[in-house]
Amino acid sequence: MRESTLMEIVRRRRTISFSFSFSFIFLILFSFNVIFLVGAKNSHDGENNVTTALFLFGDSFLDAGNNNYINTTTLDQANFPPYGQSFFGLPTGRFSDGRLISDFIAEYANLPLIPPFLEPGNSQKKLYGVNFASAGAGALVETFQGSVINLRTQLDHYKKVGRLWRTRFGKEESKKRISRAVYLISVGSNDYSSLFLTNQSLSISMSQHVDIVIGNLTTFIHDIYKIGGRKFGFLNVPDLGCFPALRILQPKSDSCLRDASRLANMHNKALSNLLFKMQRQVKGFKFSLFDMNKSLRLRMQNPSKFGFKEGEEACCGTGKLRGVFSCGGKRIVKEYKLCENPKDYIFWDSLHLTQNTYNQFANLIWKGGHMSDSLVVGPYNINKLFQIP
Image (tube, rainbow, N blue to C red):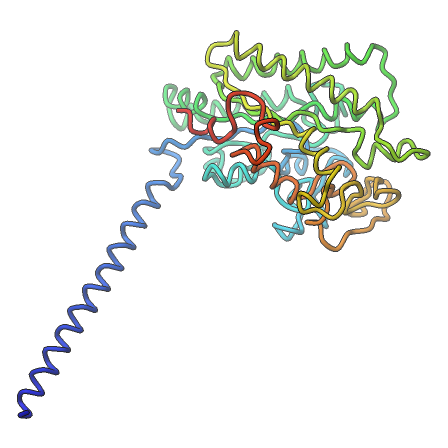
């Protein structure tokens, strides 16, 4: 074959190779641009999209750090190590080794971490939702009064955000966003556990006390509804008597504290009745109720079934069951022990749960699981609430 012919073949192959390479690079760049544009469309610009915001109210099961910014004691704060070690690598104010249920829900809903209302910073963060919860808070103003942000004050903070939204989006658009938002509430646990932790005696019957708690919660829900909220998620009260901090109050017994568990059960029955009644009677009211009580008991009774190694003892604390609330050494009792792997434990400290536990609960709340029918009460799960326009 002549040299000129060989050169021609090589030249053509180079041309084909260059053409292929150019087309391949163009395809990659085109695909990248498509992905970028799609991502931009789904990103949260806070202005033109249809983001469903998340508002959080209640207690330490949801508090992401509001108590960092109030004048209180370390009994109601978690802004010191080892809190936060498993995910954030530093304490954030969350009463866990890492994330809470609300953090996982925000992730599933394609939202950023929902900021505490009192956290200083750019108000832009508050366009996707706000966390008003305060560790130690209850439905009653008297619950740990003066040390926490009670539910009534949390409502006042929410109203301030409503004014911020009206300024930012205008009256009509902010009204739509408030209606589209999901409101997740965890309250009641402190209204009952505080009686035992502070050695109080009730001057009324247990059922009357529950009625007052539920009455205050009812008023709160109606107030949010009047402002425009329509989609509500609730965590019921866990089996308080089986928490390490309450179990050690009866040193001669290893069983759960019966009266605390009884109050939790009474509250949960009343809460369920209230929500179904509101669904029937209040136009547009939608709810999802997560049975945290049963979910926790199932894991305590059979930890290994859910991937845990320890179902009763806390990871962080001291004393029997590490039930002394001393995690971090900043509280009344300074001594504490820390487990090697929090993921193996259901309880993080004597009153709160590990990130692993919260992760499992969040999965059930969001999309259900193999026992979801009995653990998520009501016509919706949280995922469905987010999908409702």
